[in-house]
Image (cartoon, rainbow, N blue to C red; front, side, top):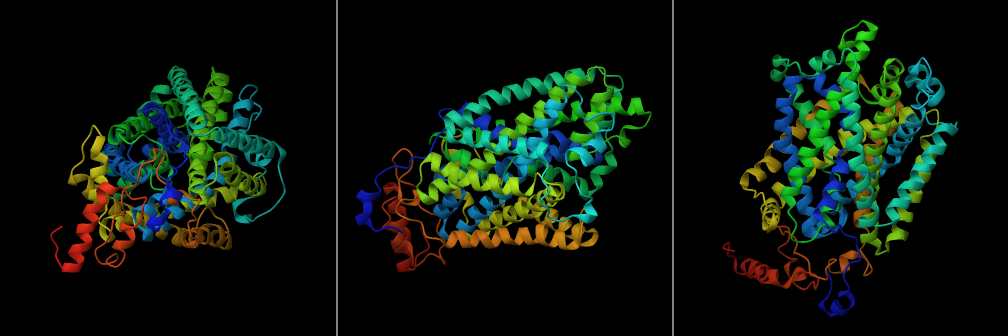
Length: 563
């Protein structure tokens, strides 16, 4: 900690950006949550896990894990007024590696998210002329991505111009928006894109519902398979979908919450974000299955034979439908336009989390921080992904960073905050200070009890699946290096970054954006018994909380427990 003689040197407040309204924050948080997973993952996950019956575990997962974890992210970011690494450092020095682990995950997701955004933008353009031709599947794999087969996966540098160029444009656009700052850049883009996304998707769903066979598709989507509720895998799928779609547990929502004014309604905003995200997922399910119902009728097969998820749904199944549908061109423009907007707002949030951490760590101004993060990420992304081997690499990185990276760090962080430091009561009190929806001990039970059990089950299940079956038919060395190797490397890099000292220029040596002092760390009686005076001497800690810390220190000396 800092010596009190340095007060004059640190009296400057942090120059981090901020949202100027709750609406701006909610739009940005929803923009981060509503992404590719809502549109191309949820409909298939719901359909293949009980149809209409899936809504029961899905809503339970939203209420039991999704929204409570969103509240946790908001509490950490808002209380400590910083990016994930510095927020966790301010919570306790020993938890700083968790924040850097978040940033490593954001780096991996950011470099491959750009290629999917570029694909979406290109297919938006292709929709006007149906440039994919009569066989969208062959076009995507052999002409557009020119991807090598999965069993031949490797790293190559045969570049594809129709992917490289839009990726370059994507990175230039993302960096340009982020240089404008939090309010003008992030909030400004979300203020335009989120209403546009909503309107475009509503129109697409409306058009899809008029297609022949749409009713069959909707019936297939919502018809409940009640026996599925007895399958633990269905419940795990519901928790997994909620967990990934809300953008929780890897630093994004923490960063956005740190840009809010002090007396913000955190839980009320969290409820809006959580239910808005889930509403969009249900809307996606209706639109996608209405279109798949049409495709099934045209091909004379069941809806189950047309249903798919992910890249196959977006870039093969949908173009096939667009070729055959009466309003195909309109559906294509609306679908790929929506996909592009959703991906763009999500990618901005991913890169922003990294930029905020660099601003805090190095004490740089906005533009240098954006360039220091954005340029190396763009170069890495452009080096690896617009190639004939990029699709397989994307597939492996996406699966492992989500199913093992995010799940593991979330599991460790919830256990650490609950069992190691007992931080949840303090964070709950912070949430309740100015929020409209008050939390009780039930929130602590959900975050500290239910969530670790669910995440542990998901992690064990995924590890067993990959160890038994491999992944995607790819060579074992490829999986070992870019799957397991990448997952372990993230942890190592996080600990290395957390070992680097924070300079006097960093945000760790400054008051918050309002010029106010910061709350004290959450101390452990055993771990921190010898470090209390160090905390008391830190001039950045709020004076009104020093008395409580002093009582704590004296109780340690006198051997009392009654503080």
